[in-house]
Image (cartoon, rainbow, N blue to C red):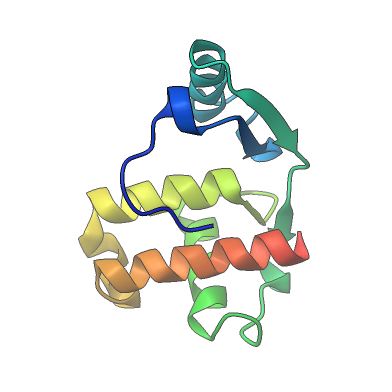
Length: 125
């Protein structure tokens, strides 16, 4: 679905689906608070994750395994798994510290790669 224009949580949103990787995180707590405040049903979908070694270049491009490896290294992810929460954290960091991600491209390119990495996790996770 694409939305053009303003959205009112009170008038336009009935339910919200949140990846299980956000449970017991600040983002998950915020989602729970918003859901309660605006009477929005919150559904937790299964925690999707993909091991960095399983992120190939065929599905969403050759930049995606490079990005996955960089995220694992930069955020010291010991188990090697990429999920929505870590992609969100990396995406925020890339906007706050763009110079640290410039080896992958400009800000808009990195943002697009983050989305492609999420597509990979959502599909294969």
